[in-house]
Each structure stands twice: as structure tokens, then as C-alpha cells.
Image (cartoon, rainbow, N blue to C red; front, top):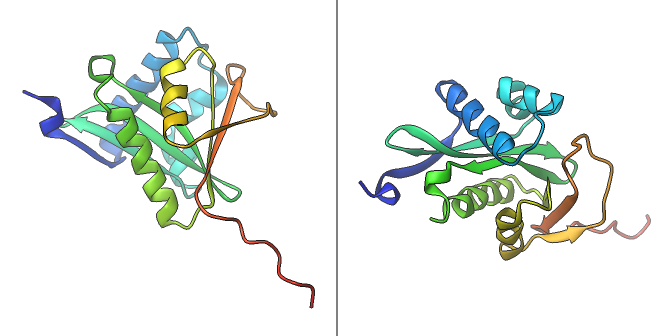
Length: 166
């Protein structure tokens, strides 16, 4: 079976809960990161962490099995890209790019002006992907994540400037 032939990217459904949790716990553990309180909430209750606030979660499935994921959190002016990972056995096949592009398409369709993300400098393949998709580095800022030391943004649309004073 060639995975690319059977791979689909769909919106999160409650049936994905166990796969979502396993994928996210795996990348955090693999990276040597502590699973922080905010991670626990996002992993354990994706409905309230992402969906209830106007975000989205995309699940990549191969033969019905979750093999990748990426979420959008509604923020001022757009969305934050969060919890993107791909099963190690499928890395290097463009799946992370497809997930990121699904996030961008959803953000654009909603009229968002920007995508924002926080990551860790040790995640070099992820940073290279973000850069290749037009994300630019931002100065450090306050963050709830101890591991976050890279901050990036992609402008999707010009933010309207205020009109002349009346």
C-alpha cells in the first residue's frame, strides 16, 4: 500500500480523540519536551481548547488511522497554528506541508489576516517547512510554553489601515 494513495485530510471528529492524543504525546516525548498544563488541556479536551473558540483541527488519515494532525486557535486577527505533527513513519513525504496548507486555506476562507505560531529551535525540519511556506521570524514574546523559543508569522491579507478621520 502506498500511503499517499489512501491519505485524506479531514476535520477532527470525536472518533479521533485517541489518535489525536497519541500523536501529540508522541511528538512531545520524542522531542524531549515536558507535557505542560496547556498541552494536557489541548490533548485531553480538543473541543474546548480549539473548536469551541472558533478554531479547527485537521486530521490526516491513512486507511482510517490518524497519522498526522494540526490545529488552529482563533487569535486576534487570525489563527495560531498549533499541535502539528506527523507519524514518524510518514515523515518526509510532504504530509506536514499538506496539513499546514489546509490550515492556511481554512484561515484564508475565514478572512483571517495572519497565521502565527510558536515552536522550538530544536525542531529544525518544522522551522524549515514554515520558512518555505512564507512564515517570517518575530522577536521573542511572552508565551505560556516553556519550550517555545521561536515565534513566526505569515501575513495572509493586508490589515486595513484606519480611514481618514471624520
